[in-house]
Image (cartoon, rainbow, N blue to C red; front, side):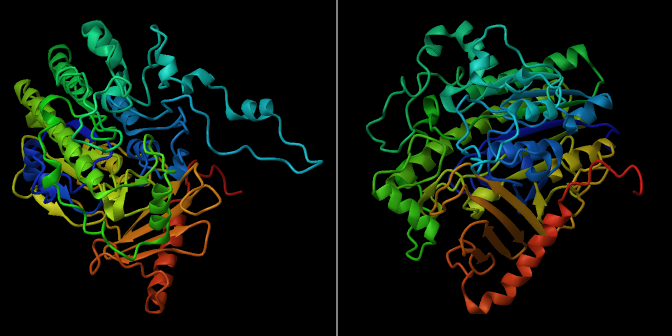
Length: 535
């Protein structure tokens, strides 16, 4: 019998596909520590994002609400500070809450939005900026600049605690060897020579590689952000055991990797041979959808942006190299998770700690010849790993593979259920475990995925907006603009090679899924606050 108030240790990786783990069937990448968590716990085969982009999905994982409801519809929009998170509720109930690593609940960079401002018609006045700001609330605007790189250039800058419910935060944001925050301050203090040689401007190009955004970092394994996040997590566990014995905790260990750029340090750079990396089956498929053709033609014209976060078409050689380097980053993360788990056992907390492993979203990683993320909701991007391990390893009744559909919004609901805390009004997730930690079916026959881009691309004239419904057997994506979409039979066509959208035999199926999509959007509409009166 587990204790009434378990601890929670939550591992989050960044831009990590489900099938880039040994426990999800990958025969190449070495992830023994994550595989052990899966072997002792519940491994979800059909866990999906609420949005396949960092900020909106991380906000959904924190709040249990869809992006259209919590307000972070896409990257660049900060999560409102008045938001109630699972960390808030745990802290209110006596838990010690901490976040170590990447948060990304607010913007990281000062780059202006790509959305053009509205242009009023002649003779029509627009609301004044001061009126709009006045009605936004009384929150100090500086509190929405807490994660910006420019803010951290001030040596006195710190996050205002509690931060979205976390009473302690060790901040390490951005990616690869370009991270900043508490991490960079530590690096500058402890390893000033290495800190002065960080980033792409100092990175060494390996002549064996042609992949963009790939360089050999000057940071060794112990100075690299992945090790820093893990070592800070182990130090926190040891400190908590000394200073607050008996107080339950909820600790999020959030790694910035294996997100691009590809800079695995030390031995992890050469750990996997690109020539031995198999290509995705969809990469050489001749009949590609129009948005994939658009990306390929953009690359052929030499107009693709290869150094940024936007998806791009890649060659076979580039894909093999980026997969190999990604695997090195993943094994680095796995080794550090092993280090954290060893500490959890050493301080005597393992027997009362629920351990969760997941990612904020996947990566196309060569599916249909495309890299990174964007409004192409192929399974490699929208399906994520989700592992839930009960305290001390799982009894036989808890060690299982789960095939029921799950969403990112179900994570907070599951944590609160396990802690014996009612979710707040407006929570949209469904608990995946019982109060005692036994499996509990989600009851979902479909999941909703939202995405609002700032960019107009893929052949669209307006910033891309897409809504996706995934059922046990199909995936359908509907774009706001244009007369086309995507519809795939995931059982007969798991690599999503044949788009049924325009096929006459799929008309009835498309209508059925369109109806289900509409009902999902109604189901996930805002319900907070509750009505105070009848009228």
